[in-house]
Length: 62
Image (cartoon, rainbow, N blue to C red; front, side):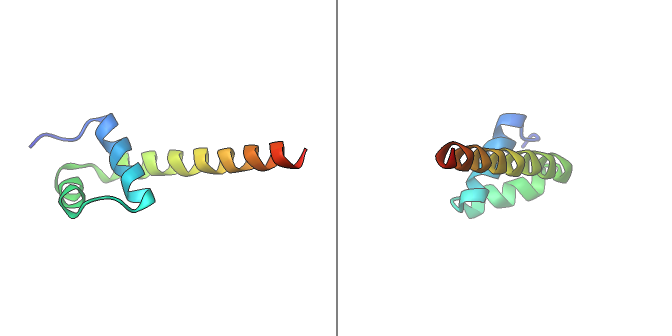
């Protein structure tokens, strides 16, 4: 199998983040994926999530 593209990495990180990642996909991520790409996409996802929470709280409290 070939390396996962960016869209597959994003889908995998989101699925793992919300807890619906299948064992088959997780194993494929560890076998074909690059650790750096998953870390970078994961960090970006966390930052976007935090910014979304801060924005919602800011709108609600203003």
